[in-house]
Image (cartoon, rainbow over all chains, first blue to last red; front, top):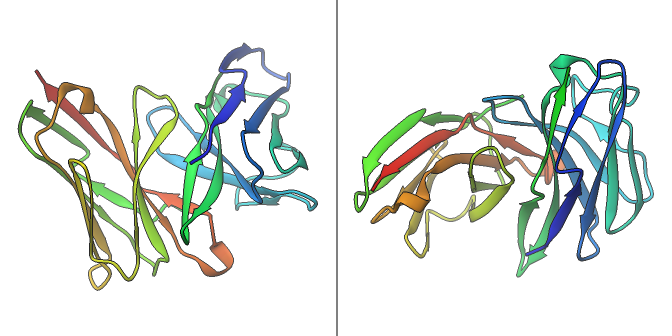
Length: 116
Length: 113
């Protein structure tokens, strides 16, 4: 398994501002993922962040709105830019761990974002 | 896009009873994973079942997978109040989508003491 931490755990932000969310893993991992969970909804994948390459975004998500950094194998950041109330969600990072040929994914505790 | 559908959307039972949640999906998969989420917090990984497996057990959890019907079920036996949470299935299609999970809508389980 993996121990994943996220900062901040929650924040309340004003419309038009940006927030950067950090994700730290206790071991080196190749693939990291960012998900969004809107209120009362399930999780939707935003992008995949691999170290040494540009993040790849899912349909409906763009780099200008959600820039991602992956400077090394244990850390990643997601920025929510020019926020609006519709960005109020829980943002979660996850990592994939190979254990005896099983590729399980483990999630961080999430960042609860409220945009006023 | 979300391909997982779960039922029921909500399930309310008494402590000690069994809880069964179902998940259906639309495309072929490499594996299917079940997660628990307490009160909008992070997800806890429960169990992974691969496409060539039909059943797996972990403690009080039993997961089945029927790839011909594109469905899976999660059974929690002898439920406890602490099992109260939302449960999600997530599929990994493999191939070019390797590692990208598609989540179902989730089942909200309430276990009454």
